[in-house]
Image (cartoon, rainbow, N blue to C red; front, side, top):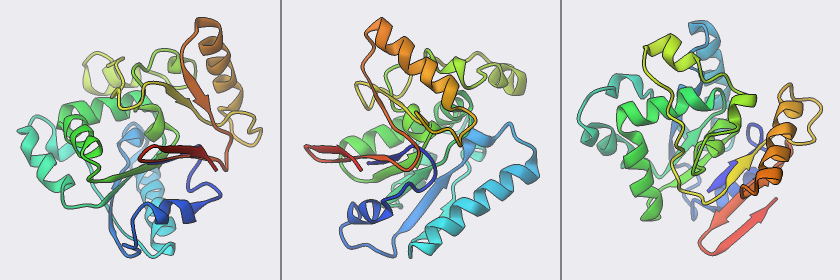
Length: 214
């Protein structure tokens, strides 16, 4: 896993190293954390992600989870299994969690990660959704976008792939969410909730038994 605080971070070489020499690998770009944005803003964000990944020599393709809503989970699982890497961009973590659940991508990605069959990478909401719970992140992201958009309740459980929360944008004065996420981290500290913090430019890299921040 390459879990960045903001965008590509300062060490994309460590992301590429996780691909074991597949320097031109195909990448599924999941941008559903931005589904509540206006269509043109969302499209511009996807273009920015694909351009950054292409600059690294990768072959990115957006995998929009919305066409898989309410289909058998095997449909999205079959598509995800074709990619050696997924890039899950930032945005609203509650919107991302909803899309993962309704498409079945949460189950599929969890299985792929546990089999070490995919490199999971991304930033902000992408790492945040891996925690056991999303409680606390409402101080930064508005959970009500989910019922407002889909008329369905918020999913508060994270994917539980990590046994701790990742809190991005800490001590990052150039980021508008830095102060709010500082409050999130302080609350986790006070409540004894396991977490790791990242400032913009940093990434948490997990490769087998090795876990480090770069």
